[in-house]
Length: 254
Ligand SMILES: NC(=O)c1ccc[n+]([C@@H]2O[C@H](COP(=O)([O-])OP(=O)(O)OC[C@H]3O[C@@H](n4cnc5c(N)ncnc54)[C@H](OP(=O)(O)O)[C@@H]3O)[C@@H](O)[C@H]2O)c1
Image (cartoon, rainbow, N blue to C red; front, side, top):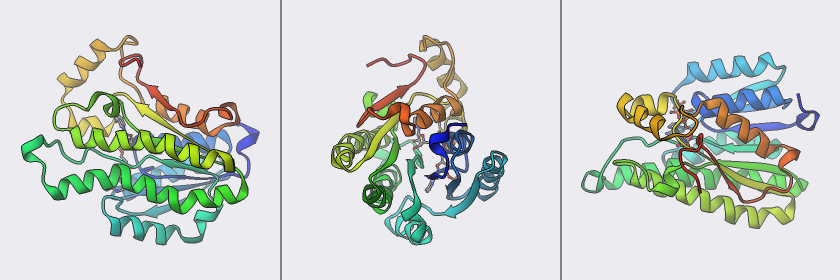
């Protein structure tokens, strides 16, 4: 446990599963006092995250919200309500490819959902939380980008990749805006994580090909990414501002 996290409240979006669930648990393990667990459709999984958070003595609260539409974002922020004022650590993690779609297959509706879930929600959740951090003169925001932001994404993932490129740009612009007020903003950029995301959107053959191209010889895990997020929220990263940290086992080096 790191003393610096004592008394802190963290909000992790998309904390029902995958990287977000691992991050909520890792922040509790690091010593956060309260973890606000956002979820959308996976209520039981979110309850399981809450149970794992409480094992470390932290309070856990669930807040639902579909972040793939403007109405959903606003409803989530209404549910978050006054709790936004208490958030010291914000991890904008909720995201999804939603559906692979090449140029001709992409509808206006799908385009908007992908952009809204992956980029717009991170912006407006930050807008409702970060000013309170700035008023206190301290806080950490971590955005979750993707290797796709740099590569343009795999087949049918171009709009998702563009949304993640926006997220990486947010990390720089928001960092510049908020650093003078004591709030550090950074991002992590996972490579290919062996979790539900790729169980849904990729084949085993695609994943095996990634492993073959990865110097470390394996896919990333939820915990690999969560631990870097906790680092970015910690005092050890006090001079790290506006960075996007690649977490991919050396699969892609910049
Ligand atoms: N997996 C990878 O290889 C990889 C690589 C690079 C970046 N990323 C990024 O990492 C983040 C976490 O992904 P993951 O790998 O942990 O995927 P995951 O296991 O599929 O989890 C996705 C999380 O996002 C939430 N979510 C999905 N659709 C949502 C919606 N419409 N509204 C609100 N929340 C929604 C899910 O909530 P519910 O289940 O409750 O609906 C879940 O908690 C995402 O931003 C993703 O783009 C993942």
